Image (cartoon, rainbow, N blue to C red; front, side, top):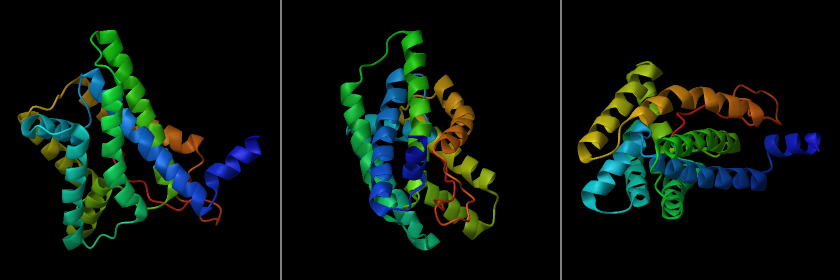
Length: 221
């Protein structure tokens, strides 16, 4: 059984990789909904989408899709090339975030809020490892970061910090929720993603043909 599981999660079979991508993006959307229903803060990009949703009066998921589309426009001058996974990411995460928000009730006690956020954060890390392991293209925000790093020559941490500070401030001014969860996301998503990458046997530096050859993107889509 263990050998079968290992072969499934490391295969180069395209159909299996598509399944991994789809499942990963579905779980990613649900994870975002769990964190938002916790109402103690969310990731910077989700704060932005939440604030935009409250300002213009359309669903959170649709705002996420619109933001992804706008971000992809910035790929053009950066000469970034989207993959199938990039387009799927731009659409499906928002769709399933809305599904999750429709199904998951708002947590109204601190213990439930914390539980909802923690469950969402862990699920998001697991989902990230799934879709990264599919190796079918980075998310729109990932490509924006790597493209800016390549064009400007600035370090990754500076570009990522600049992008995330910008979107979280704008999101907060638009009415998005910034709180302890936002800080917890910043501190926790990296280590949790590293753990789930190891669980799913995703080797980011693999040279063998059986391993999935991908680069580690920023963990929010």
